Every structure is written in C-alpha cells, then in structure tokens.
Image (cartoon, rainbow, N blue to C red; front, side, top):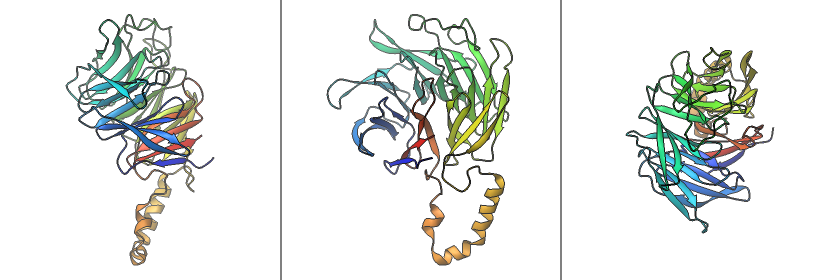
Length: 370
C-alpha cells in the first residue's frame, strides 16, 4: 500500500470536507466560513472563501454533477451556492429550513434534486427546489425522532434516507416528495413509501450516540457506528419483517465518528483513535481486519495498548532527562488528532471505492489508497 497523500491546510479543526467530482476543488468547513481550495500540482491552495453563516459551519457537500455546494451551520440556516460562470463567483441562496436549533449535518441526494439537513431540533429537513417560487423549501421528518440528529445518508434511489441520533437509534425513512421524485422500485425496505414512513428502526446495544450511518452500494444493507466503539451492520429481509441479520462488531478502539462502504463486503471507519480501520464480512458475520496505517500494529488490541502504556511509564524518567517533548506529543498515526469525516475520493456511487479522503481536528486532509 502506497503512503497516504497528506495536505496540512491550517492549524484549526475541519468540521467537514467535500471534493468536486473531478477532485480539482476541495471545500472545507472552517469555523464560520467555507474555504475552497484548488489543486496546484501535488498540493492545494486557497482559491476562494464562502461567507454567509454567522456561526460554526457543521456540514458542506458538493453535488458531483451540477457542482452546487450546500452548507449548514449552527446559525440554523443552510445555503445553496451556485457557480455564476464568472471566475470565483458564487451565488448563495438561503434555504427555508424552519428549525429552531442548530443544523448538524447535510448531504445531497444522489440525483441532486434534494438534500437532507439534520438538526438539534429533533427534525430532518428534506429540502427541494420549487420552480414556481424560485426558492428552496423543506418538508420535515419528525416522528419518531426523540433527540439531536447527528448524521444522514441517502439510499441510491434518492428516496430512502438513513439517520442516526443521540437517542441511540439508527432509522430509515422515506423522503418521497410528490412532484419531485419518481416512484421508487420495491426493495427490501418497502414498496409503498409515502413521506415520513419509517422503514427501519435499530437501537444500538448500549443506547450510545450514533455518530454515522451509511447505506451499502446496493442499498440493501445499513451500517452505523456508535459511541460505545461498536459498528452495527443491518441486513433487512423485507417490509414489516424482522431483519435477516443485525451484527454488532465490538472493538477495543476509541469510538468511530465516520464510516464508508468501499464494497458490499468491506467498510472503512475512522474516529477518535486518529487512524483509519478496515472491517469486512457479510450477513454471516463481520470483523475488524486491520488498519490503513503503516505501523507495526496493523490490528491493535488491548494487549498492545497495555504494553505500550507500561513502556511509557517505565521510560518516563529517562525521557524527562532527555527532554523528548516531540516524541511525547507526536502520534504514530498520519492524523495527529481525531478524524471527523471520511469520504469517497475515487469511485463510489454504487461502484467500488479505490481511494478515500479523511479530515479532522488537526487541520489535515489525507487521501488514502485502498
């Protein structure tokens, strides 16, 4: 495996990031603004800055085909930014979310006619464009949400929507909007799907916060990671029937905050452990198979952690004499702090993912080859 491509953009946390389809533009959420970087050789340079939000930006997503950028923020607003044709000029359009708490996450639907915004108001705003009034409006998915929505993900059919929340549940909803969506084909999640139909509801074993949810490339399986350091994979069997399998993978790592399907039988996940990890399996069982890091511990376990902690205390007085401050503070992982977002960089959209990108609290964006 080749070494990852590291871009240290600045010394501040990156809440979210997104690449354009041709991977020439990188959008990162930095504090109240969105910074746009363009590729220049092997690095990225700051090209433009999107200003409009007056509180921390929590989500950004670039539509692969149209190039439109959607952003959301703790100021309870979302904007759709459209390129005007002039160099570096973007036209913002305010979206009527109608929420009274912070927006927490945003993602475009695969067909790019809608996007979903999670919020602290126990609401998911499904937004679509009204041609008659020339604005973006929203419909609310409310029941049975009982807490802050932390993450959303779209099914390949652009109608089903998965969401995770701080009440420990991952749910699958229908977001069918009459006049905007075509009637979807029947799937394992259901046949007739009016708006706000609950197609699946799954509780984390310890009711820990759900940090991220993801549909498999086919849309026939759902994975979610929680604050109890588990990853749960659900295989539904059909509408209004118990699932074929609900598999929970317990790890000895710190919790994952983001996950992504690379194939139908493999996941990658990242989070507070600062590394990117692989999981593989099927409906018969899943397991943690290793790390993308080039460290001696490709599959860290509790014994290795205990041994490293013992060695650290054993040599603490020696290090004090040597003054090895750099050695004490520099992590062995590529990221030097927790990872917030994991995205497909090459591939995806139903196909196999060849490269992924990660961003985190250390201000780095890293591209990994799988």
